[in-house]
Amino acid sequence: MPMNKLYLLVLLIVFSSCKRNNTSISSANASFIDFTIFEKEKIKIDSTYINEYKNEELKSFYKNYNNETVWESKKYRDFIISEISLAENEGLESKDYNINSIKSFEEKYDDLPDSLLVKYDLILTSSIQLYLKHISYGKLNPKKLYNDWDLEDKKLDLNKLLFDCIDNDKFEELVEKCKPQHIIYKQLKSCLEILKKLPEDQVGTIGLQQRILPNKKNNYIPTVKKRLLYWGDMKEKDTILSTLYDAKTLEAVKIFQARHGLKPDGVIGRSTIDALNFTKEMRIQQVIANLERWRWYANDFGNHYLLINIPNYTIVAVKDGDTILSQKVVVGKDTRPTPILESKISNINLNPNWTVPPTILKEDIYPEAEKNRGVFRKKGLQIFNNKNQEVSPYSWKKSDANKYKYVQNPGRNNSLGLMKINFPNKYSVYLHDTNHRDYFSLNYRSLSSGCVRLEKPLEMAAHILNDTTKWSLKRIIDTTDINHYNKLRLKKQLEIDKKYAKLMAKDPTLVLEKKVLPKPQLKTIVVKVPNDIFVHQLYWTAWQSNGTLQFREDIYCLDADLYSKLRY
Image 1 (cartoon, rainbow, N blue to C red):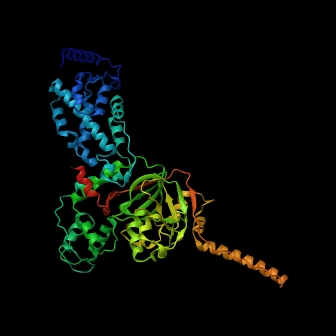
Image 2 (cartoon, helix red, strand yellow):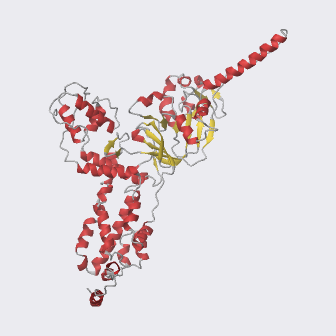
Image 3 (cartoon, rainbow, N blue to C red):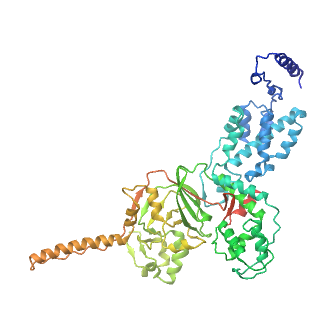
């Protein structure tokens, strides 16, 4: 310690001793010695050392502090060390932030020469900057990994955040705000904690090809029971060696299936076996991949939004923090996956017509049409040339196929069903009804060509429009129901026929042309959505609810690949 500081310390101690006899001063108001004056003095840093990092944010950081060392405060160093040491709780790795070097420097801090103090200071800054980036918007960039992810880039003024931390002594508060505040992210952290506390997973795998039915014997049943016991879905151990698929095991299997989004029928089929064969380490890796994804998503979903979890085949409508609606959905198959995106609803189409997109034409319609031109009529498609003139299906030629437009008129059997929700996006996808309403009874619903199909589309339209005067649910139903228009036509026709009959009764010689109303057709109605309602099509396969781990099938096989890239 420099002599002048030692001398000052002695004076302060003496001064403090003299005050002890002054009984009029309470302990609460006793003199306080600010020991920060004994911290090491700031050291000027040669810009050459800073430039070696080739990091503009690092340069800007030290420029703000006149190119001098910053981390003299042990309190701040301890916070950085503690936070980085716990990076694994966020699904990150503390070694990425030089934790071993930092701890080594800190142990010898009081004896470090100026050159190493400068080196330590630079390492602390670069490490906390990198850590803050990673917890704020992820270690990886999804736009560099995938072609079908379109999320808005997150913005973080890294140095401003650090300046606020230092100048206002708010490290803990401000760093915590950098982390995603979504409940699902916090649940995933709980998942990770629960999984890490589980004992070592030494249970074998189930190498079974055929199904196991209740009340049947199978040599793999003991292994099934062990895995159910390991995951906590089965509590009893007294029948673990039995090869009989008994009632207790059946109930445990149903609980396990429900936790994994499988049909809880107790039949141990391929999907159930695959889920049972996941090890503790595999589940940890899955949770870590999901934590990374949630760092990519928007910090604020808005006050009113639709949230789709693609692997869970669900959509919820949330307004002011309350879940108003929840429905099943059908999502894109693995060859035509539903894109991950964030957007805002622009309008709703009631009775939409459907112009067949190029991908479906090329992969589905054209190959069938080459074999049988009748496929156009079968699918209710009309063909139009560039003058909007209808072309007969039987004069259609594959060589001219791309010159035409293929349109399906509104109706219940239209591929879009009775309603479509539009929002700007570069993939030309939307939310819509479907003519395959039977799909919602299936457990596996990765079946569409990329768009999201809604189980109860008209209820969703009523929720979005939120106008009981102009667009009540009843009016929406009537507007999209051809039978409603047929009834109106019949009523009007009866009135005309009645009027005609009265005229004829008065004068039987009267010659009148009987008026017959045309057959009604559904017309497309576009309703603008004036309020800000956001759409978030996201992907997560793990979460925790009331202490219960929930997992879903990774339908697009993203989890393992993402984890390997995180740990590369």
